[in-house]
Image 1 (tube, rainbow, N blue to C red):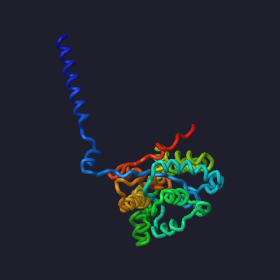
Image 2: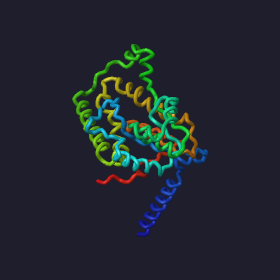
Image 3: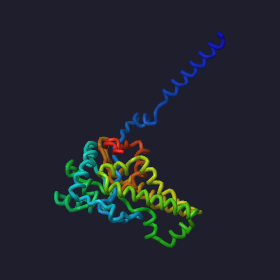
Length: 293
């Protein structure tokens, strides 16, 4: 009996010592804190394109297109803006490639612009920047490597990429069809539900994960390396360049960044910013009111 009791006490002591040792392990973040690297806060806000240029593969039908300039939409937009206002951004980054062009647009922006320009850069980015009296907004979108290669030597590019066939076309067709239904649902939510619910839905963790999955399934799965090579030099490269452009703007640790892009960009951008010790991601949905089920 005493031997058993002694054994149990010894086990508990060892377990406690081991737990204490684990609790005393340094956090990964502490290495950067000790080095004086303070992370800059960044909010990533995924959006649909208010003007419906339909430049992406998925096209939004007329019935699912919201008139963002209508009185109802403008009123609902204020609720989205109210969430971002509580974050108090000090810098705003937009989906534009030409800084001089964006500067000129922002310079002439006035009250009438908000009544006539159905564009998320204007309706969200410029509007907030004007309210916050920001001197400029940042153009951080980018071309991608594969387009630059194509211009430089299209023959060599096609030779390098090859022409691999899809591994399982019927399965790829099913995935693409399913994603098409998902995108149509997102369109209908953004057009017909309260606008704040549309933004919350686009920026939910599950939505972001499965949205990025569209690039990693379907026709991506090729017999050879065409799918991975094309995706890496096209979509992944573009979003890495966007991230790099933000870094090149040299935000300070005291800045609060707002990055407004089409919501398809957000999963990769979020991965980049969350992985870097130089940034701390602030979740839009944590500041917004929950969607009513």
